[in-house]
Length: 139
Image (cartoon, rainbow, N blue to C red; front, side, top):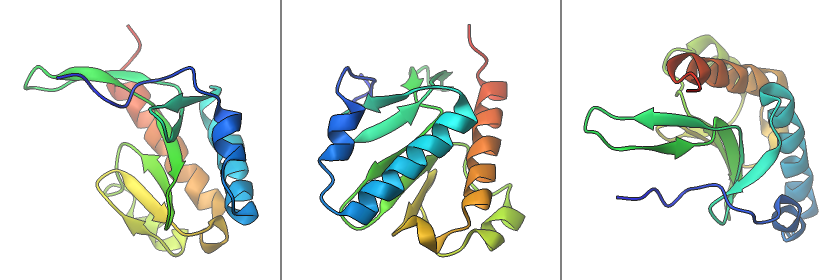
């Protein structure tokens, strides 16, 4: 089975420019800055709607393997989906201070960045990226 979420040559700027809501677009610009600063990697489109930074190669016990961005985000209809791939369970003190959000397995859903503490968000992203780099060192 092939992973559908792979890096593409699509323009990150074109994706951002297509966001109609000016405040959402500004939030996305801030996330690009934050994630680029944390990872030291340029933004890349992963699939049609995820702006990702860096990558890692995973192999599951089942033998399934693939590549995924270290962190990234997508502007969805109702919220920003922010990918904190390593999850949140080990960071309760940060989650308590983050602000207003919902979570999925490895995804934070935030309506707007003003709802969260950006320093805490940056710490979450930094911790996740460090964990992934430790767990999946480059070949």
